[in-house]
Image (tube, rainbow, N blue to C red; front, side, top):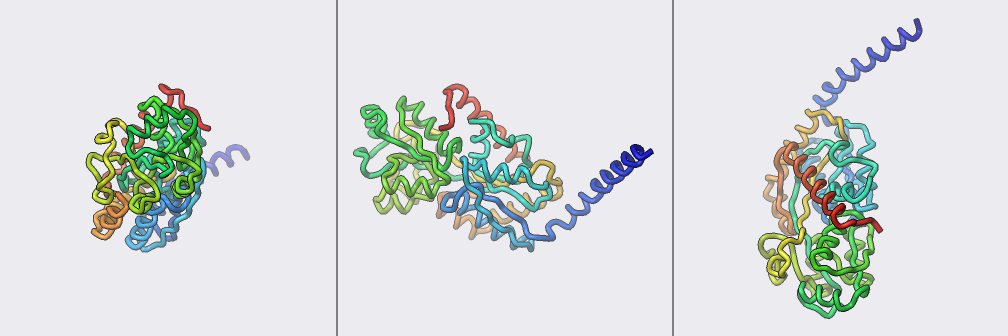
Length: 323
């Protein structure tokens, strides 16, 4: 008898929760939202994410609180979000490291299965930067120097298994050279290490090092994109530098835990797309080498699946392992 009552109570509770979910989604948001940035301050994720958080909060009428949770190429903060309730009150501002990390090694989450895509926010590029102590001034010179001095050069990244790490591994494979990998807890710390000479090479967020390049404190030998950036007009594209197949592109976007109500995802997608149409947002993004993206949640999900498979195949083909 007790067993029958327990089953009936469980069924009733499940039904009530199912009824409550649409009601909660209809009033969303009625409290502050947490946006987790899975990298340390100082990089593109932090810069673009904070702009979106401020403008999105204004449109929603609720504060969007930014929380940096760096580590393991973005995996620490991302896994944290995966384990939060799927109610739209904890979301992640991720880069394509989100898909790349899972392609390199088994994570505590699956980028496709465990998350609900919301919207692609911004597209930007990476730059191949070197410490001035390296006696070269172009990409071909860097390749030749690395080949003639095996084991002498080290490269940094924003975390083992992230997009900066894999983009550099791709460069090394294409160039047929080797360097020592030194991972950091974000773009900012990696750039600090490059500036100090702790590492000699760093492929990372263009916007984070633009002023250092302009001042001559570090050198840049190639940048992503189809054409040169107006912000760094003297830096050749990877195609101009002789390596057109380098993957020097970064995207950033928003995801939520799996099971987040469609009404919540639709609301967030709509509001972020409106934010991306604001002239002041486009202007701020452009100053950091970013181009507003936008689009549907479904399209963004396709981006994630594509990058996950792309890098999964690369890792398997070249036997890439984490340090």
